[in-house]
Length: 210
Ligand SMILES: [Zn+2]
Image (cartoon, rainbow, N blue to C red; front, side, top):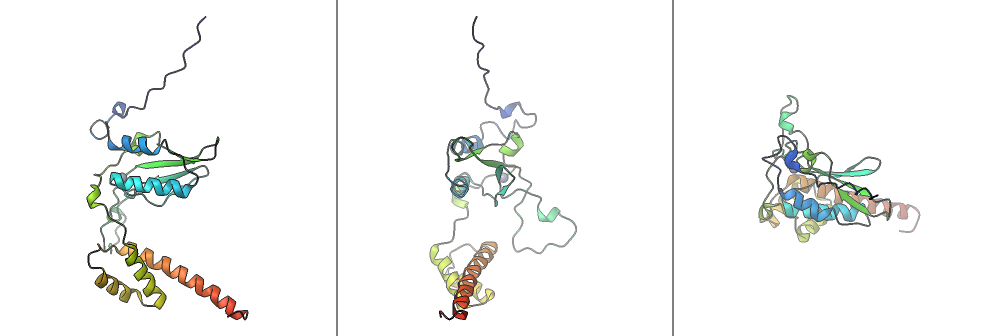
């Protein structure tokens, strides 16, 4: 009597999914998943940072992750409905929304065996492809240089107002592409650090250590 053969699991073939033929076969995303899925990480932070860096190499960016009880989802930053399609409110934005309802995502989970963090792709082929062009690496937004971030922190610590900081930074770093959202995020980070240190200092002073 011969042993039954172990069932052969064929690799998922996107080409068998109706409607996916034009966009998906042999996509770069297969290559992306092939690079990230074999890796193991000691922490969510490491996993997320590596995934974000790799995504940039492939021409897309990721949103802040969201987690359910077991899984952490990292979504393409173009996920969601563009603001221009939401309701009838007039839109006041300095930058056009880049959201185009892209469904791409990747799932981060903790391996039961060794408690390491690993990625897997979604079973749903819609979640494994982008519905937009990817950005060539040379056009990918680059992080601002440390000197520029330090300068923002310097002005925040002097208590300079937002408008004046913006003007000063734009004048001092004319070659850096301006990104209002990035600027605001940086300001709020710096301000929270500054105010936390100040708070601690005031507590010490009140207790007679200062
Ligand atoms: Zn996308």
